[in-house]
Length: 207
Image 1: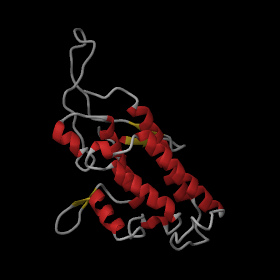
Image 2: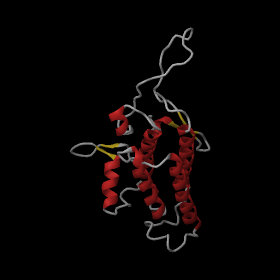
Image 3: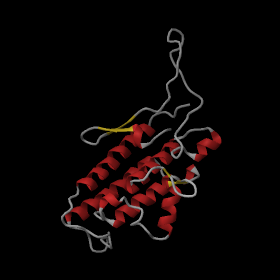
């Protein structure tokens, strides 16, 4: 229920492990062999609004949280932006920027324009689909993995210099002196985290 960057641990190969959900519960081990919880909690900015309304967690609740994490990966910004005069959700901010066709302002400046614009647009759109207010409008995490793999394929083509001319349309300024270490790290992180999410959503939903 509480999928967020601080709960995603990476090893040296950028393989993700999701942990620390704050679901510890005391019980008497000499009497109880199974313990369940009726109420789950989460972190502001990552919690599925539908869950907050119904208090019924589903696998789509995790999809929502993962969508927020994707937006953080793309933008390099936190889930809640400390904007003036009041903080706003990263979801709201990205939606407003993309509505104006302004993808360059969304992407983390540390990427230095070294990305395929089609891939980034697709990742941002996937993330916004994941964070739809109504859960039935969100994709399954398996669908998300398939779409993210397509994004990685686009980035591979871009990095290799073999991008089809029809796809390579204005991906921002490219500095030939920059390497793709940062880009590859983000791509690997997205892939490993999304695969880990597939495994997790196949587990029974906590109650």
